[in-house]
Image (cartoon, rainbow, N blue to C red; front, side, top):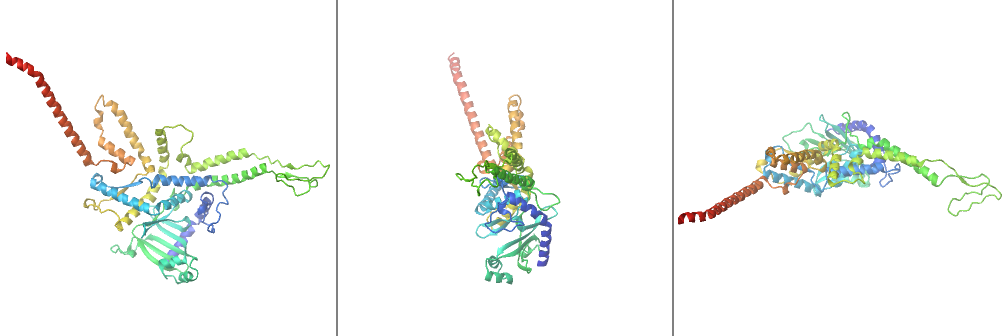
Length: 527
């Protein structure tokens, strides 16, 4: 690969992204100050809250990011299942066991890695910048390594399907780490590492589809996606490799069809956030003036300086009527506080806070609480659809294939060879989208059950299918459900027990009849 082409392409993508950078910087300044390093370059450990006078937007962004984390990728509960596209195979017990074992292996890989802390940063980038990026690579110690990259490093390009398939990452790294990873590929960086090993140097990492490759070869130079590390100062190619799958996941919160990068709730609330901070600054000044007002002092009646501390003595000319008086500024602080609360409500609505939190001081039953939670989760369905296609699906595909190549997945039975696998999302947010089906089924059962006393209407209901459907929608773990064979065996034993009971009852009835007829027979015989 020609490094000049890569560097020129990076410059072109950089010019395309310029308009976004100022927007991202403003959003971060007021909503995520600790990551406000887009157009500004700050020293590590520097104060980041100099523009913030009200933290409503900061708390709202944290709440939305934490809620998405808990509703989509919660470590405490399953959030995806694997299943085969062929429904007949899904009913096979051997297939169910393999799917459950494979899902468990993936959950263990997520738990042993740094996924949970990195994915939370990804959600924060989504709700503030509208675009997030996470690099998923192999790791010798933890099998898989996740790394959420700052938006300032990432330059993206979509394919014809609207999926991001090209990422240019421009970042800084200590010179010593470059030498450790790439050796002496760059003489310039090697000299820097020798004299000042902790000085940071610029590196360009490019991942894009490899069009010119030999599909019959499996080496790194013929994989579907090319990986190129370039030293942009002198155009040195530090390393060339490849990936079997696109290693980045680049979800967008919402996106215009004419734009590459996403838009976020922080962008929607930016005007209200800036106004609220300006209003808070003004009201703080007004409150200070009301509590500690400016003083009116005669120019010749007092001996300066004027002492305003408790117990301070101020001397004035004897016989003079001049007094120290406060300057009345006429500030209407309650009006300002009312306007502030209006802006706070607008910001909370932009970040879905009114939908994520239950209203307080309202008496509700447990059923009503569940119903309200499900309704609120369904309000996020547009976000869920995009996150499933741009984040969860490529994430699960990438991890599955990495574990499969490392032989950390259970061996599939022969009956499953060549079968296509699909992903079923069972997170709380995904289940909330399907609870309407369960409610409809339960409502139908409530209506039909009383009618069955008049006519056998329940004959239309497939009870086995009803149980399977409800269990699937609610995400009931397979290990607490009996298999089809076990259910058949239980029903067979029940049928046998009922048959034996019927035989015993019939025998008892025949014995009772015989016992009742015995005196009559005896009487006839005596005659």
